[in-house]
Image (cartoon, rainbow, N blue to C red; front, side, top):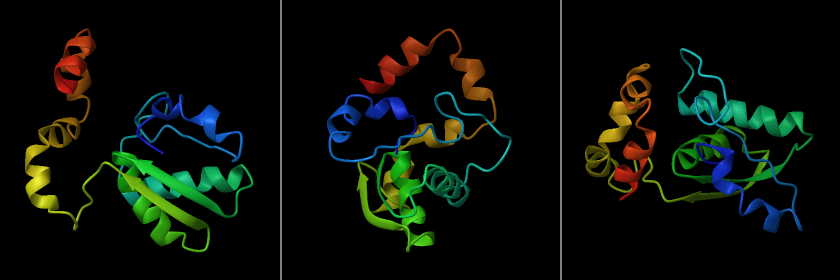
Amino acid sequence: MAGSWWEWHNVMPLLIERFSVVSIDLRGTGFSDCPLDGYDKVTTARDAHEVMVTFGHERYAVCGHDIGGMVALPQADIYREAVTHLAVLDIPLPGWTEWEATNARLWHFSFHMNWDLPERLIHGREYDYVSTFMA
């Protein structure tokens, strides 16, 4: 689990040889809907669990990267009977790992919380935004 399933597109073929693999677009990412609310991690964790159950996986392992890690942690907590293994990669977790100090440097979290503003400012400049951001 990450923001978008595409992050895992190179890894999934390797995993599929031994595991059933489900990778989803979290709310507001990739090709998912952008509801007006429900972006909290508990709601998003419920979404992810419901996807797994819908596909017939009553028990499953979860791997979350970046924002997906922030969703995977409450998913494992809330659905303890379902989540057999948990891996959280490359994300400071709220309440842990010096979250406050780290979050202060993550300006884009606050930027992207503004409804529709990032899309309006970045539209047509996606390459510039992402390439500068990643550099």
